[in-house]
Image (cartoon, rainbow, N blue to C red; front, side):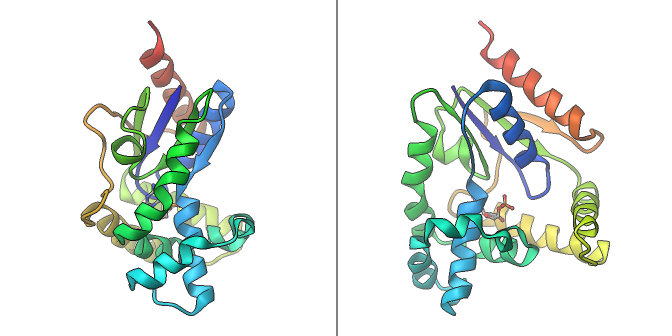
Length: 207
Ligand code: DC
């Protein structure tokens, strides 16, 4: 069973995908981490994330980089969004994601284009969303918990900027597949969001 989980930044899609993988006993791939690794590698190389060839060169990042906690930072998220615009970068990361999706026994993948490009044949497609204000509040809480003081208004501005870049890019933009089930988690807490997703998958695969 392939489960595709897409949605904008801080929508809760990562948490939901991880819990779905655990619940249904299938492996999980956070595809955003691949773009984050490319963004961070460009920076390490002293390259320009807006230059397609620099970003393509960074696609051969070493696997250990995926373990680097720096990949989770806001700054790396911004770099990831910039390198993800380039068609050659998306192409370079395609096979790895497709192979993960089609492994025997199935998989859960979360990202922006799983239901539309990586696994249009997925058994279940979820599109997780939440209001900008709520996503900013969640990100702010998470950062405050890590002792990172960034004003809420700044986080909100960054989310709006990142959404616009992800939605408006030409290649594989962030959008719900026509057959995706949309789950708005604005008024849900973590457990409610996970429960809604598990129920949606169960309903979709039940005969
Ligand atoms: O999900 P995330 O915040 O870790 O993703 C970081 C960036 O990577 C996001 O702004 C856009 C890009 N991305 C993408 O273009 N396609 C994916 N499948 C996953 C992430």
